[in-house]
Length: 267
Image (cartoon, rainbow, N blue to C red):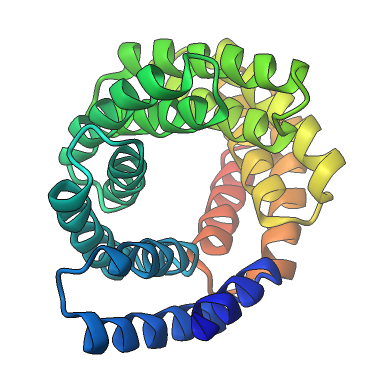
C-alpha cells in the first residue's frame, strides 16, 4: 500500500518513471504475499499499464493490461466496468502498435461503458476517440470520420456539463483532420486542424509539441489547397516548436524539416 500511494503521488506530479518503479514494487510485494492470481494484483497491473503507456512503452503496457484483463475476467467477469476499462486501455495501446485487434477491443469496451455509464459519459467519449483512430488505422476512413464526429458532439456535451476538457476536443479535431486528409477532403481537414490549433495554442502555448504537430498538419493541408506561402510560414513555426521541445533528432522534427525543405524547393 505504501508503494501504491507513492506511485500515485509521483503520477500526480507527472513523474511517470518513478511512478512505474513504485507500482512495480507494489506488484512484486503483493504477488509474493498473495500469489499470481489474486484480485489485489489488478490495481497495480492497471497502473503499471497506464504509466508504461505514458512513457510510450507500448509493449510493456500491453503486457500489464493483458495480465490485468485475465484477472478481471476471472474475478469480476467479462461484462464488468473495470474489465471494460482495461479492455479500452488495451485497445488504445493496440492503436499505437498498429494491431487490428484494437477495433474489437474498443468496440467491446464501448458496449459495456454505454450500458453502465450512459451514452454521454467522458469515458465513452474517450473510448470512441480511440475507436475512431483504430478504424482509421485499419483503412476504414468513412467509419472513422463518423465515429470522430460523434465523439466531438459527446465532448461538447460533457463540456456543457462542466466535466469535459477542451484538450480532448482538440485531440479529436486533430484526429478527424487526419482522417479527412486520408479521404482527400482537404477543406474539411483544414477546418479541423485550424480549430484544433486555436485550442492548443490557447491552452498549451505555441511551442508545445502537440501545438506544433497540429500546425505541421495544417501546413501540409494548406499546400494541397494552393496556399504554399502561408503553408511554409506555418511549417517553419511548427519546426521551431518541435526543435525547442523535442530536439533536432526527433522523428517529428526531422519530418517537419524535410517537408519545409521540399516545399521551399518546389516554389
